[in-house]
Amino acid sequence: MADNQAVSYFKSSGDSLNVNNVLRTILDNPLVGIILTNNRKIVHANKKMAEMFGYDKPEEMTGKSTRIIYRSDEDFNEIGKNIYSSLNKGKEARFEMLAKRKDGSEFWCLLSGKSANPDEADNADSVWIFQDIDEFKKQKEMLESNIYRAILDNSLVGIVLLQKRRIISANC
Image 1 (cartoon, helix red, strand yellow):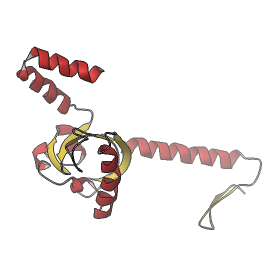
Image 2 (cartoon, rainbow, N blue to C red; image 1 turned 90 degrees about the vertical axis):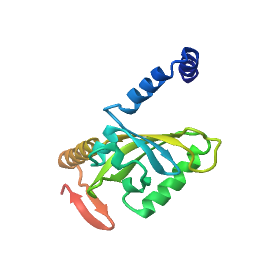
Image 3 (cartoon, one colour; image 1 turned 120 degrees about the horizontal axis):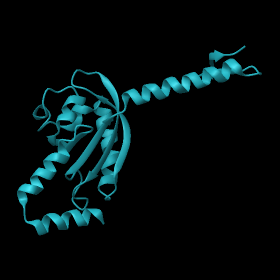
Image 4 (tube, rainbow, N blue to C red; image 1 turned 45 degrees about the vertical axis):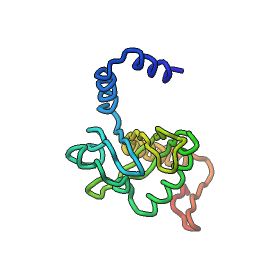
C-alpha cells in the first residue's frame, strides 16, 4: 500500500526533477551497497557498493557482469540459478554469501534483491541491496566458540567433540 501511495504522489506532482532527486538520495544511501542490474550486468552502483567491494568509484563496476562479486564461476551459476527463479516469481531473494572484493579478498554480505519487472523473461531488471556482515559473522563465531568453551570447562560430565571421527575438543 505504501508503494502505491509513493507512486501516486510522484505521478500527481508531475515534478520529474523531484522524482530524480528522491531516487538519487535513495541510491546514494551511505549505509548499504545498492546496484541496479540488467541480465546480470551492473547498470548502476552506489558509492557504498564500490567502497564495499574495493573499487575507487562506482563507475568502475558499471557495465560489468555481477560475476565480479562472486568467488567462483560455480558460485555465480549456482546462486544465480536459485535466486533468479525466486525473482521471476515476483518474490524477494534474501541470503548471505561469501563475496569477493576487487583485490580477491573475501567477506560475508547479506543480499536482498527484487525484480523490477517480475513478469519479464529470466534475468529481468533487478535491484540489489548489500550489507557487509563480515564483522558480525566473526563476532558471532567468537561468541559461539566462547559459549562452547564455557560449557566444556564447566560441565560436570566428560564431553568430547568429534569432527569426521577426530577429537577436536574435550573437557576431560
